Length: 129
Image (cartoon, rainbow, N blue to C red; front, top):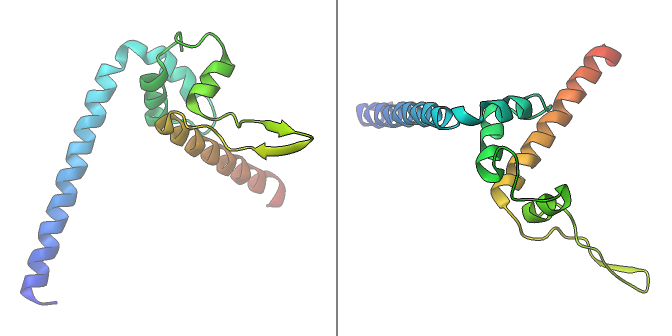
């Protein structure tokens, strides 16, 4: 490795360290802002697959009580996680999910994948060996 490559590598590592520091600061600031919604966040964290960051994002998008949505169906529709059902003469034409809140949908999909992975690990430990 030449001296110029070493210098470039050091500069990139300094940038990564700076970004990591900024991300930690943002996380602390977010946690402080969400302090008033701590109970809702703690309840969400109890759900398998949902961590502190995901819970904070969910509360930020929906609110601590989801008061803007009279029913769970309306919330699911707003998020875009309920597929449409266009049937005519017993032929299904659309099962795509509508466009919705892509940020919240992403968080829910990641949480679902984490929960499935966690259950698979527990299953392997208990039953496979």
